[in-house]
Image (tube, rainbow, N blue to C red; front, side, top):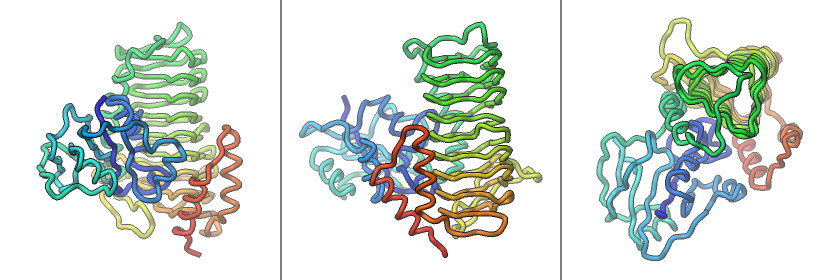
Length: 399
């Protein structure tokens, strides 16, 4: 097996999505970059992460999964690689760079590999060359822009999974694209799988409720639940152990999140342990049909997304009350409680928003709520995770 390394160089700005995980661990389609690469090349020699995230990955058992044979060349891929994975690697001693000059991939010999693994710096004698078509993700809206193509690629690699089957007679199937239902998944009565425009895959342990409609391409992850009468539209990824309902389209759920009640959610990127109250709805299109600009954090610049369809970016552990109206191009920082029906378009970390105003969410109160939510799914936060939350809370405190 090829010796390879996945390197998160900490570049780009992705708002709250990389507060509690590296970009290598962010779901950009049905898979994360780490999952996608591992399926192609096997386990990496190492996962090199920015300072502050390595302990979190270690706690999840993700730092190192294989060893390198002395003298063996090592291939290094930037975890922000945008596009289909490369069919071949750079020659030894070369580094491919994108139009901005950032390294997207390189191949290192024995001595260079040791230096890079220890110091994460390329030796000066590595030849940097521009690679036509090579690009790196730099902003969240680029992930959503690529989602249709990325999801199709991911679903194609799932084809032929052991035991996968077509839906039974209790469901209705439309269209010619594949519909794969894991035998350990369950379907209610009257489910409609519309595969006219793309494939649909239902993972092990998932449940699709009565009369739900799924329009491909769609992936429903392991242990997730789609509520009765839900409308899951094209280019939607529901990560593991999530509960969803209402109307959802062109959206990625990282996992362990709830949006089970009625309400619309579109063109959005959702972190873990998020909860949407009943009737909470987002706008993903301006009344002017113009380009959406976003501010990823309250103190950051307003940036043009290049998209007319742009919903919201929601960090981990954000909780929305009932009937919250989320405006087009909104961003919500990790750990915030949104109990205002009309929140601003950019909310920082650990904010407590009500109709009365904006305050800091007390850390101990937040941790109590988090523990209660996680215990319902048999999860307990580890020491590195708790320490990271404390540091993020301190960094985001404004009063």
